[in-house]
Length: 314
Picture 1 (cartoon, one colour):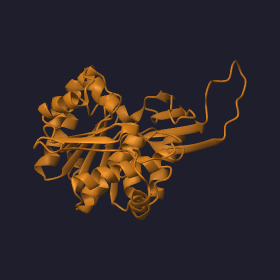
Picture 2: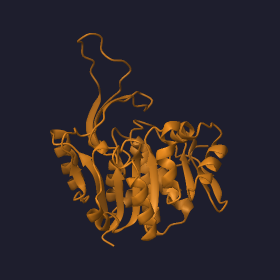
Picture 3: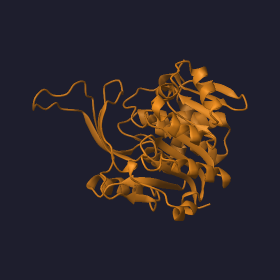
């Protein structure tokens, strides 16, 4: 196969600063300690983090004909991410955010919707798209054109061809369930955050949420629970919970996306599903230790070292 990991969906340009506790009144200025730029999004951040782990990665999505799009593509090239199927969408801006990171790592943001809603995979691009061991679909609910049935067709074809499929969403609501439900029967691993899964299902109990999503056809559900760690439940009855790593959080932007990349790294390496979750948590934790998506993630060797040396929360 040409690629180890194909990450399709939401790619965004982020400008981040910290610490921010309030907005300046009127036309005043507050000074911040740290400022950075990052490629983020449920597909973009996962693509770069996986590439840092040494996987051969393909990014698929849309950017605009603007400076932000130029930068997103250039930054992906820095990590040797293949961008042949990244589309320049006429009439769209690049999806972009200004992220105001709080002292506790929370990240209120201002976001402009953009070309994630404009890209589309045609039939003549399917062979290249699915020439991959793992297909990750990230950002369902923002892909306006692909969400109208095309994502379901792609996931079904991916499974027919033997790809491992992973799925993530963007800040879902119950209204997004009709977009997500057709995908779940062809999803091996559905990996929403606790907030996303609760909003999507309308439930609050984590076990009930997992049961609900498994009943819709997902092969496995991995709920990321922030400081509480992660829980895994699958259709065979396998279940386990793993606590989070004990770290000082700087910024949580991109943590779930980096979890997805770490989990995929474990799948690529043929690790047990428990190790896949641990790799996901370690990648996410490193991300949280710096400002901006993939901030502290550098290599697979460093992620494995982090796993060996960093204690878990008690």
